[in-house]
Length: 536
Image 1: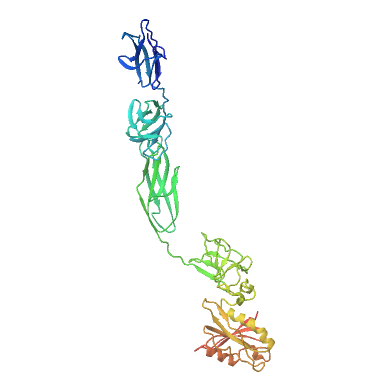
Image 2: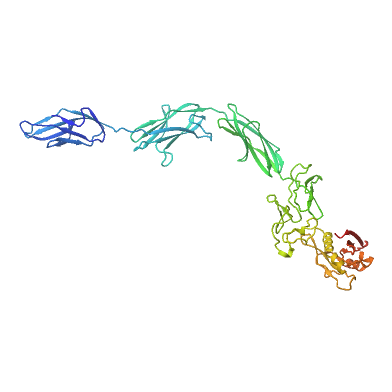
């Protein structure tokens, strides 16, 4: 009799696999009482009826000698020949692992086979992935056969990257490997990665700034001298404190720092060599002071529109040639000017906007391309029947500072008087009635005239009374109606006395359609009449 496992003698099974053991037993003089199954001297189990078998389910890894012992009804026994069985560990799939060294001490990017500067601080990182059903127990990092360090947990939660820091590495060439071990003791090792650690001297750099003391807006010329004894200069960065001004990658290492505002500055140059080592120069102080104020003369035309601007030396720096509606652009850099000069005043009360090309009045916008406003008059018909018109289409001799009316404001007293007489003299001649009114100054510096007061006395008689004096009156005006006598072409004695009493000049529209001005006498100065020409 012998035990008969389902495997042949010297067979092997994987740990965890049940081992079925059977025995064939017979007794010619009696009956079989039981069959016992042994591992060496250890009883595993027994069977009392045929077929005599036993299933061994908890066999650990190892080699075993199995026997069967039969006992008959007369208590006689017999033991079988031993059968050898080997229980082996289950086959495992090793983890996968890859190694990438990363530079720790600078911002330089290092390839798989990297070069570092001694004494180096190198972060060694490996990506380890376990086989299905397994976990990573540890990742060991080696330099040749020498253990550098061991990582037992990934660097990030739920990650698979393991790392150690290798510090104070001296100059040499090293072969680095990473060995990953899982919970079943299966291992995987990377191919070697070559890491070169070399000695490297830092570059030298010095900085000059010219001028060291400037006037805003200043242009500072920065010049750096940079060398590297055992390599090359990769770049030189110019800094104002911690703020970068410019970076130069080729000699000469120079840059112009333009439009520097008033203030004190600390400037440095940072040189970086081909291996990423950098040196910062000694700081150079620079002081920029405020520029001295400049004086410019603005030359205006008859309605106070700027036409030419000159500097304190009389040089022309800006010119705006006359165009009826201001439709042309100024010359912001005449021939003798050394730089562009921006000046945005246009017709009185207007500001130029370069983005839209419009002239901004206080209440609305004027388009010089079409010679009219782009919005209707905010005061409606009170400013005239054409609510888009600009100064009644006559911008050469009339102005509208606020953008509220087409023909009510004039740049000068004389212009307002001329417009008043142009307005009333034709009807005065036609009706042979005298009209009179006041010329007054507006709060914004322009001039206007009051409505003409009509004299209803005897036709042809003179009465230059303009009525109650305006609070800001600067002159008076009147007409003489139709030509009757030569004296109608000049101021009467009554006209002159009235002007003297009011202490203001008087303007006259004559029957022959001329305009005259009388300046009343002052102490030691006789009165004077001036012919201002045709009323047109």
